[in-house]
Structure formats: structure tokens, C-alpha cells
Amino acid sequence: MSELPPFQSLVDEHGAVVLRLLVALVGRQEAGDCWQETFVAALAAYPRLRRADNLRGWLTTIAYRKAMDHHRRAGRRALPSAALPEIAVTDRSALDGEGLWAAVAELPEKQRLAVTHRYAGDLSYAEIGARLGCSEAAARRSAFEGISRLRREGWS
Image (tube, rainbow, N blue to C red):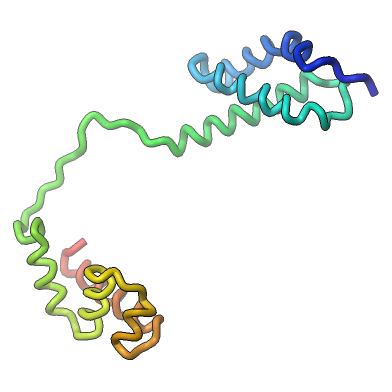
């Protein structure tokens, strides 16, 4: 077991290798941030490191994991769009909601009340069940059936 060198010596000796690896893995634009994340993580773990025989391998492993973290984050990042697509609305009543509420009024009573209480009154299913004199599960089912029927009729 060899003694650990000062952390700055580790950065000086292996920093360029880690940077080249990261440029290859994430590109020149993002490599600097990943390099910094790599060495911050290495600094945090350095006091617990017990062996100094393969520090370059240890650092490149950390760098590889930081690059994979970068790719995962990039996959979840929202992409900018030049323009939003236009969606045609053929029924003007859908714009003001009158048509939708007229369709809700046509639902069977329990479904109508469950949908109205849930989406207009913002009540929980337990509260809806108490008002309708049924269980929470029954209130949830009534709201689900009402919404399903509205969707089948073209309301989304």
C-alpha cells in the first residue's frame, strides 16, 4: 500500500487525462463542467481512499460516471422549440367550457356529481364520498366513469 499524494499533485498529474476522456465522452462544451464535478467528487472521497496504486483508474472511473450522469440529465432536459404547433378547435363551445359543462350535466347523477365536485370543487375523493353517501373508492370510480364517458364523446 502506497501513501496518498497531496490532492493538488493528483490534479496536476491526471487532470489533463481526465479532461481528454471527458471531451471524448460529453464533448468540448460540457467537458469542463464534468471535469469540475469529477474532481469535487474525488476530493470528497479522497480522505477515505485506502490505496494509491491506481489513482488514474480511480479518477477515470469517477469521470466516466459523471459523464453518464450528464447524459442522463441531458435526456430529461426540456428542449427549446421555435414555435408551438397550432391545434385547431372546431367547436367554439369548447373554448369557453360551456359545451363541456353541458356534457357533464348529461352524465348520470353520481358521475355528474363526482366529476363536478372533483374538478370544479377540487374536493378529495374522501370528501366526495362523504357528500354522495358512498365510499372513497366508489367516488373515485364514479369520477373515473364520468371522465371516461366524456372522453368517448370527444372531450379530452
